[in-house]
Amino acid sequence: MRFRNAIFYAVSFSLAHSLFGYTTAQAQQLNLPDGRAFLPPPPQAEEPAQQADLRAFEKTRGLKDKARWKLAQNDANLNPSHVIKDFSCAVGFNLDPAKLPAMVNLLTSLAQPVEQDVSNEKDFWKRRRPFVGTNKDICTAHSDGLDKSYAYPSGHTTWGWLTASILASALPDRATQIMQRGRIFGESRIVCGVHWKSDVQAGYMNGSAMFAALQEQPAFTEQMTKVRQELLALRDAKTAPDAKTCAVEQQAAQDAF
Image (cartoon, rainbow, N blue to C red; front, side):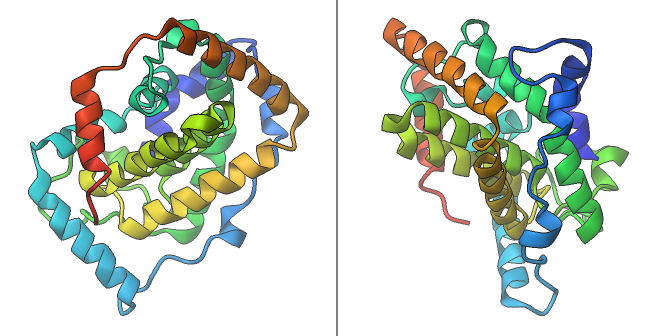
């Protein structure tokens, strides 16, 4: 699956290393919420929600090669270090992964259980991606892993919303901006053309449920203390994020699909 391929770096890292956060054995015991039970089913062809999905897909094909399209291409990269940097504008300072080892390792150690959870859900619903059977452009390269994989719920959105929730918990004074970026991260999958709008909405629900469950895990709360300390120390350095990137993200926040 495409989500599985995109997150391969993180999973490989977690299998090969003992982490600041979870070991592989601990991660497998997280018992994340099962979206096959709590997520609503994806809309059917005759339902208004599916018509809204189609309109969003068609509308966003007109964004090819524009700034929003390029942001969607950027957001397709699920390398934990890359995803962390994506939230620099939202937190108001440059997020340098090299100075955030606890954050990097927390996300890396969560990659495998999150991926497995989402893959189980996608295999259950078996919803085709919006571009399948069309000649419409998408923002990323075609592959068997993408073209033959399922859409519901969006794994990228789940991952982005979970990351946003972690950051917002650590920096509550920036929660509005952080969660806005988490929304944009999910909407990038609509812009990219690889997910329906309702896939993304389900991804937000998925990420929220996972974060709620993780907060009851002692290993997670212990690691969050380290993450918070790292972020506060980095904020004190007052290194500004890239202004052009921030402008693109601010414009993206105004888009409606």
